[in-house]
Amino acid sequence: MNTYKRHRFPPDIISYAVWFYYRFNLSHRDIEDLLAERGILVTRESIRL
Image 1: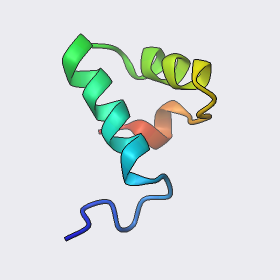
Image 2: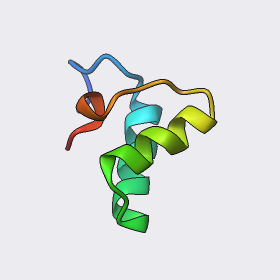
Image 3: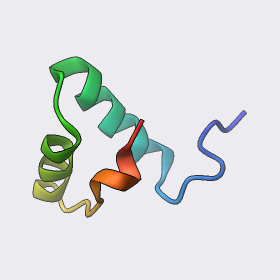
Image 4: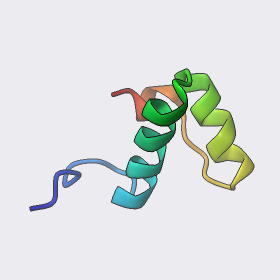
């Protein structure tokens, strides 16, 4: 079962953002910045949980 079926980003990217969010208690802006450093361009709106 693919729980990310309707999302526009690959499941690996979504899982990575969620992991950051829960592991380090980061804000959406922090996650956006960390992913951007790795070449993954997202907005806070696209990673809202």
